[in-house]
Image 1 (cartoon, rainbow, N blue to C red):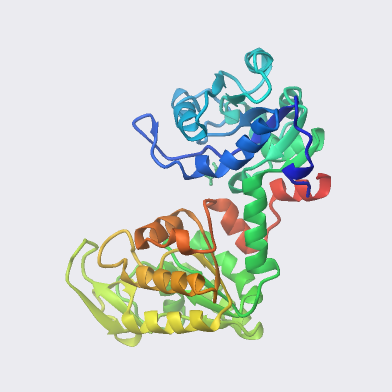
Image 2 (cartoon, rainbow, N blue to C red):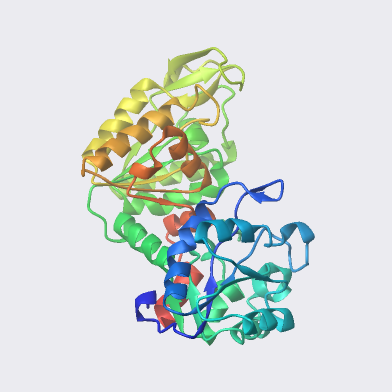
Length: 396
Ligand code: 3PG
């Protein structure tokens, strides 16, 4: 695909698709990670005399103008981080947008209102796409985290305007390719978290790609149950037992080592600082809940990481948001961070909970790459082509 290096932006209206689907609290941006991610692209365009016109969605207003889903509150956060004024247009197409663009000088920044206020956006309707395309001379996609959507602003525009990948998109794709498409082997993947049904499918693809797969969190309980262990009252999706068994067979066929917990931290109430005990996985009490991996499991996972050259991580190993069930995740995260700092491991992590867990462990800076994408990161792990990326490869 074409990167910004090859784009002639001077004096041009540059439509930049960014992801401003940021957490908000009391009408203010409460986590600006995604805004920080787009700064290199916006600065690059403005420095070179382009007009930076930002396109983004917020929430899921389903084609209606929902007042709480306006992008206006993002403007002050953007202005602070960019250190310059940012104009706002009340609509993403039509007269409001055109008038705001007409007022721009070269090097200015404008944010257009939530593209999802129009039904055409999610339908990737060519009429809506044309209304967007009229506003710009070139299109830059810098929203990897929205690239799993085939919408007008993430996919359609690349058919109608010269299309380029922005800096954040480029960095994300390069990091992800190093981790899975052409990685240094052995590759180890760590998959955990509580959302078993939405994630179990991705294991089917992963076992064919990686040399070892660590399964933790609620996902591990489902596998342990499928193997016939009694897991007490632990979180588990029993109807996925067949899927879990199929994945275990596929892993064997693909020479992928599966690493499941051998011991677990068990509690009787899901409460912070509640009494806990560690049990071997074949001795989980009937009324107990597995809430974290135990110390033996951590040691096994860490020594498996020592064997690996590349690590891909999605999902915590236990209920990390509550102490002491954060311990397993924190210890493994710190170990992986140390290996990375020592130059022995390339580590890539992604997904909302995973980023929160790495922040909690204080190691996000030490990983090679941490992706702020949620759904897009998972679909990429599943091996699905992402429409917003594919179109850049074809047209860019
Ligand atoms: C995200 O927050 O993961 C992206 O912005 C995509 O949002 P969506 O799931 O509403 O399409």
